[in-house]
Image 1 (cartoon, helix red, strand yellow):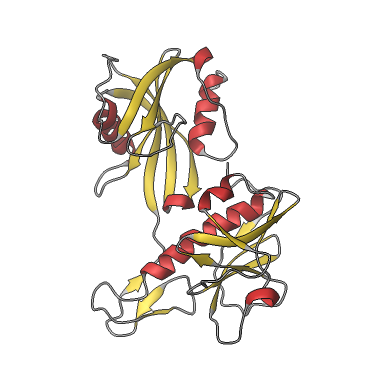
Image 2: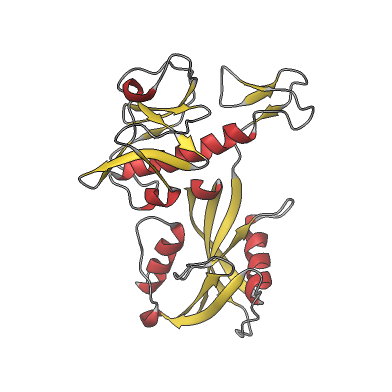
Length: 275
């Protein structure tokens, strides 16, 4: 999956640090990333290439000794030799650890940008010096990075797996699994039951946790579950959420694990008879 960058090691422990010339500088413009490609590899600007004295940075994380900093408030014009790319580039960017760095940095950039002012009193937010948090200097309101828990659900019926396609997503051609965000006051298992019922009208049983994945494309912590259809397997489609939902025999599943998403890994596990 996208976070599986071994033998590289991701260290997100926050300690205020000063950028040096050779450090990576992540620069975003309305969600796009400033980068360049050479020999199939993605590169970000080094601090020495992009940082000016009047510009502000914040330390993000370290990956096996390589430090990544965020240029706060970004920039409008691309640096010579670089261009603006959409976040989708991180799904296939090599080396994998730099793709992971790029999308994780974007999640933090979104959070910093959305929390420049206090949601309680409107005062300016200032960074804390001990942990990754911003604080209102007027009322003391504290805000930590946003992480939204959600579920990915592989619903099975013997040798069959339920695959879906999202509605209202132009160009979406790949199948996915039932998915949704956890609501206030419910467990992850209750989220599984609710989302399956809402999206395809099925009851489920034998809910089994598989694994989790940080999915910075949507600031989500995804939790994967396998479960079995309980009783009637006729689908009642929620057309506001889904365009398609259909059962596939194991041998006829049309997609494979892409090495990036929890969804595709779970589909691949079932297809290979391992789940």
